[in-house]
Image (cartoon, rainbow, N blue to C red; front, side, top):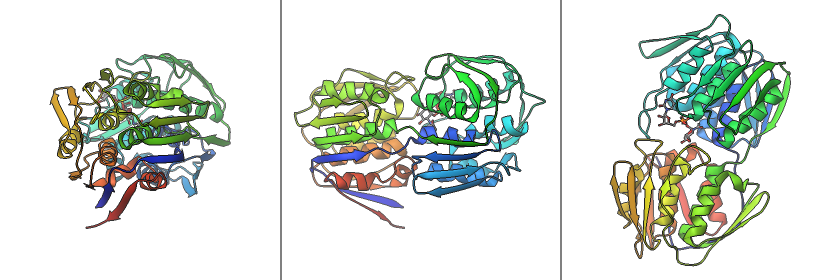
Length: 419
Ligand code: UD1
């Protein structure tokens, strides 16, 4: 078990480079199998989810190798169409491979992704989109069997702008005959990065970043290179850590527009924010006040992934912050742990009310999920004394070198692996 020990109360100062985006690299890795091409992906974070995606690619018969932050994939030799249960279980978002495998081989078999730490994880919208493109899908004993006799372009109207369903539809539509139009598509920046990669693959696609994405035609290329976008949630994490501990930190290589709702909230709370073209500086020296109500919704609204992080940064802010979590049913598991540090939080259904306290005191806490784990670290940086975060392995699913980064900024953090 991975355990973090944090002695709070040290302010953070310095410059940091933010990692490549987990949620961008995973669908791009799936997209590499659409043709048998060679791909070089630069700025790939070293994360357990990325390693899991590489294992899936190898299982399918592709070559997937890492050299530093570059991942090389050659999908020419792809010879399987199934993903075994162990690999599906390792990374729940592996369902993103469904559209890509179907596009390449016209058949796919994988176990049904179960629920996850955040609550049920239905894939009805993914399946509906693939069916409307012409896929025949049935479920037998918890296993999904998909096949098609040639996918055809169509109009797909998503009833909710699901990120994963949009990506799956984009990937399968690459192999469809004729034009596909996806309406009410997710608009997250990661969807734009996928579009950019698909264009490099030779796909004629436009509209990503708006609610309507059109895919029409594919002239496959054999060698593709791509630099993965910077992780906007890792950026938000660094900002919230600085707000919690106080200090002054500059994020390099970021796109400030990607996490504007988070910086706007922090600015309202009393942090000074200086936005550059590819950098952002936060100065958190004044006492904080509660931000306006935070409501999570699809991009460009406030991201659900940043909700636990901002909550951790609000624990000592004067006044009451009201959070409404609209995306995932079970995304307040960090609350009970934050309360162990002395936080004043009450939850009723989707709403959490955080009333600022004078001080937080270190405690023993357990991480239940990725962003919840990072939220405990964020809060611990602003607490007096030692906080021990158990089950912190979740954190490595989404952050590369988070402890090293915090240490480089002056935090007192150590991470051990214990049985
Ligand atoms: C992605 C991100 C995740 C982020 C989420 C929302 C990746 C790898 N993960 O997850 O970090 O928190 O977007 O921004 O990119 N839903 C359905 N049916 C479906 C699909 C989704 O009901 O077929 C529901 C989900 O249960 C959830 C909501 O829609 O309540 C949002 O899910 P979705 O946008 O699909 O998130 P993911 O793609 O799974």
